View: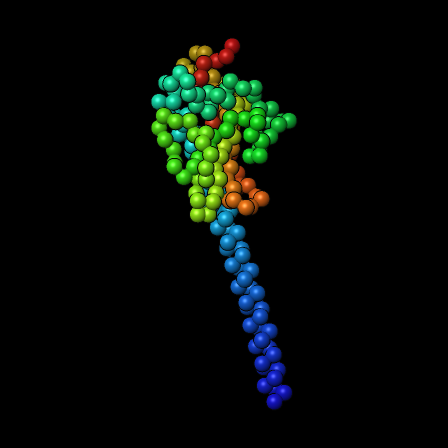
Length: 180
């Protein structure tokens, strides 16, 4: 009888431990899935800036301005003293990607979720960094009045109701006329 009671108690303890372990693994899996979805949204935001900056309809339009051209008109980001943060939407060029996707001939400024189930937001911040000689370029380019304009694009993704924001950055160099 005592032996049966000991076996029953040990099985109960093992059962509780396995249920607790299963719940912890489930929480970890949900957290990883949330982070992955938010990262996908951040990557889509970066792709949105590149898409809009390469859109010939936006580039040739006199009213619309692509994000890189718009960022170039602002002051340069001082990488030593400033940070390009997802939460700071006042100082930088902002774009959003919604569930409608990316459209040719449009600036992507509208509000909306990148995905609705679950609700995820996707946005970007773009800043001009500096003008520099193009590395690895030929003598023809370096001998002319062409330089590389360097930009930083930060893609941001956040699941609704979560405090954490997942971000990724892309540094882009664009051949452009030298400013001097």
